[in-house]
Length: 460
Image (cartoon, rainbow, N blue to C red; front, side, top):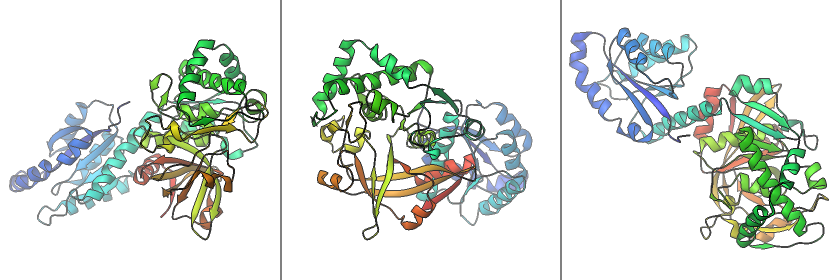
């Protein structure tokens, strides 16, 4: 998958020949100023279109594998041309103009936008193409359109049923098909165990050597033994092979209690699947959600796509310090090692320890660390009265020492995050799980929700 959106740029102008000749220098000048757009996306451009027949001829030449449509209105043009483009190209739509008073671009934008409103065609209006902030809106919509197109036709592989009675972790497959074009394929967790036990010993040892050479330390004890560690590695190799064999774009694994009690917890698989390295070297992210959290897996996949391949995470909303406004977010065993990155190790495993887990009789280990400082986007697909909505926050992970882990559960990796959300968030949020990606992608998530027709609540 290319990380660059494919966008159509259709430039419109005057339909009256005599007036068009007068205004042509303005249209040419504005069109030449769109180099920022050409550099940011894969762009297919029209000539200047001045009639419905030209619009139809241009659309007929297009490769249909496009993600979004930009209608450029540098001067006044008849609104019907925009409507015809919107009808022939049912893509996420941006109207792009300028604020120069001599061009009449705003008049043309409002005429086109009003016409689109009347026919029920959603669109984004960007009046000043020279403004950096509005340019970011255009790129965000393109990335969102690419993400939604990429999702359509993907399959979530779920292993095991509902975990620990979490209704919010379940999903309606028919609703997913309708909204996102995504399928859910259900599997038994016994497949992971059966395939894991068939992995050759030398392959297990190769992965173990790679992992143990890079972790900060491994502390066996209690039920966490060498056998448990080997089983966790076998589970990772098995789930990776199953995802490849079955064609899954992303996965969710119930883990508790069957794996955590009857075999070994799935924490290493969660860390490595969501990460960018394993014993085979650099690899792509395979989104993996704990506790068979379907809506969580979908949120993580959306964040992964919107961030152009970024590493997503699943965490519990553990605690809010109402005095400082700091949130403690934790996962019950593992996070992608990329969240421990401090620039000293490309795999980021040098700051990750392995310790006995606090639950599960299967003998697995947990991988605690403190997430290093960074800007983050937090999001979660929630449902209320059967309808999806997106909870969205912009945050900053604070610097903390490892000893801070003990204030909640020392064996769990944790992030200490400042956001604009407070008690009002706890009153409204629709899950115990929230999802995180490094960087500010609030614009992209908003744009995704707009074109996917999902309400979005942003705390800012």
